[in-house]
Image (cartoon, rainbow, N blue to C red; front, side, top):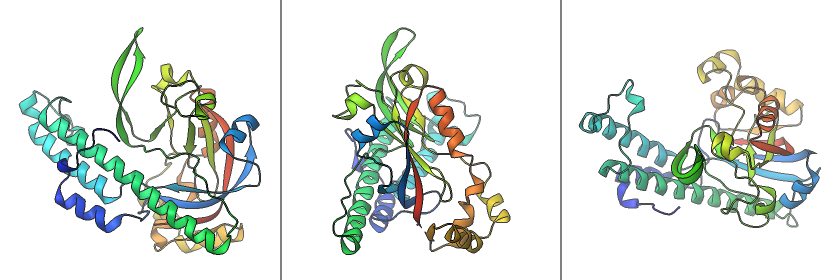
Length: 302
C-alpha cells in the first residue's frame, strides 16, 4: 500500500503485531474449507477458476491488534485535538482531523502500514494452509483468487455531480467492487469485474460476486463484505451454547474447530442476517453480480 509510514505506528502497536502475525484473531475472523455448491455465472466462474464441486479455502482476518491499537491511539489524539481544528464532536467515537493536518497525515501513514500488515498476515496464513494441504493432499493446488482489505480508507477517483474528483473512500462493513474496465484491475478481472467476497456464517454459505460498472455511481464502487449481524455478541451468548452449536453443525457435516466455545456462540449462524437475502439485495441494487455460492465443510475460528 503506497504511502505507508511505519514511523507513525507506536512501539506498542508494533509489539502487538510481532506477537500476532500468522494468526486469525477472534470475532468474525475465520478460515473455512468450503465447496462450490452452485455457480450462477459460468463465464465469470471460469475466469475466476471456480467450478461446482471444487473445494476452496477462504480466509477472513486483518492486521489483528496492530490495527486496533492504531485506531485506539489516533482516536484519542484526534479527540483531544478536535477543538484546535474547530471541530465539535457530538460523540467521541466520531473523532477526526483535517486530512492535511499533521495528525491526519500521520494517521493515514499508520493506517496504510496496518493495511500492509493485514496483507502480510493473510499471506502467512495462506502459506501455512498450503503446507497443511500439501501434507494431506499433495496434488491439491491452492491458487490465489483475490486478496482485498476492508475497514480501510483509500484515495480513489469517482464522479461527483458530473465531474470526477479525488475522494477518500472509507469502507467499513463494505468492500471494493470495481466493475469491468476499471483501470486498477489486472487481467483477467479487467473483463469480469473485481471478485467481491461476501462472508456468511459457519452454518450457511459465503458468496463470490463480481463488481458491476454502475456500482461506481451508486456506491463509490462498493458492496457489502458480509451478512451483517442481526443481534449483538452478548445476546448471542445468552441464546446459544458453543458446544451445542459445534455438535449441531457436525451432524450436518460441518466441522468446527475453535479454542473458545464462547466465541462459537457469539458467531452462531442465527446471530447473523440471511446472507442469501443480503447478497440478492446487493445484486438487485446493481452493486455486484452473483458468481458462486460456497458452503462450509471445515470452520477454524481464532
